[in-house]
Length: 318
Image 1 (cartoon, helix red, strand yellow):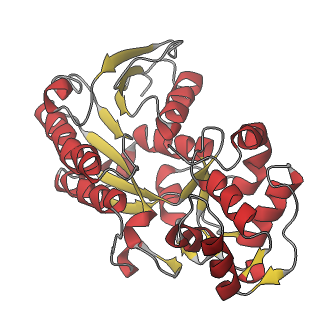
Image 2 (tube, one colour; image 1 turned 90 degrees about the vertical axis):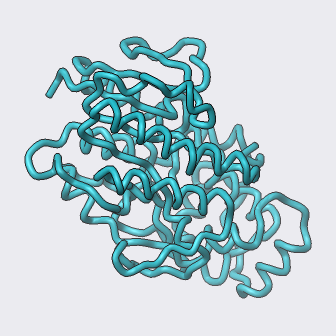
C-alpha cells in the first residue's frame, strides 16, 4: 500500500493542500503527483508537480498516466457561470476521461452539499434527497458528479469546511454578524461542518482503503456526523476573538433578514440562510467505509485556525 501512486488535482487549494500535507506526513512512500494551474513557491517536497488547468483540456493529457488513484479536488466556486461550467462540469469530465484512458482504478471526487439547494434539510441521507442547485457553482458541481459516477467512482458531498485557509464559511459568519449583531432566530439552526484536516484524513483513508472498501462507488456525505448548532459555533468564534462579542439577545428570523438587507455586505440572504438555518446531512457511512473515527468535531479545531480567521475577518472570498 505504501507504493500507491496518487494524483491530486486542486493541489494548491484549501482541501487539496491539506490532503498533500496528510500524504506527506503519513504516507511518505506514496508516489504523489500534485496537479495545479501553477506550481507554488515553496511547493511541498516529495510530490511531483504538474501544471494543468481543468478548463484547458489539452493540459490534462498524461496527468493520470501510471496512477492507481485520482483524488479530484479542484473546483471553481465563484460567480462566473462560464468558468463554473468550464472547470466543474466540462473540466471534471475531461479529467475523468483522462483517468479512464490511463486505467486509473479508483476515482474519488469532492463535491458539495450545496447541490441540494436552499432546504431546510434535517438529517437526511443521500438516498432521501433530490438535488436542486440554485447557483451556477452548485449546478456545475452537480453536473461534474455524473462522469465520476459513470466511471464507477466515489463522490463525496461535503458540508461547510472549516480551518486555516477557509475563505468562505467563517468569513461569511463574520460579515453576517457585523450586519446582524444578535442571536439568529434563537441560534438553533443545525448545519453540517468538517475541519479541513479531518476531511483530508478521510479522503486519504479512502484512497488507501483495501478490501471491500476499495470498490466503494456512488455518493456519500463527507463531514462530521454530528451537526453543529449555530449558537454553539458563534460562541466558540467569540471565545477565540474571531467575533467581536458573543451574540446578544435573539432576534426573530424576519428581523435578522431585514437587518441583513439594510446593511451593505457580501453575504446574500440565501447564504445567510445556509449558515444560520437547518442544513445537516447524515454522514456516518463514509467514516465506517474509511475505517476511521471522525474525531471530536470541528468546534474543537477552531482554535488552531483562530489567528487566520482574526486576520481575515469578514473579507469576501474573492
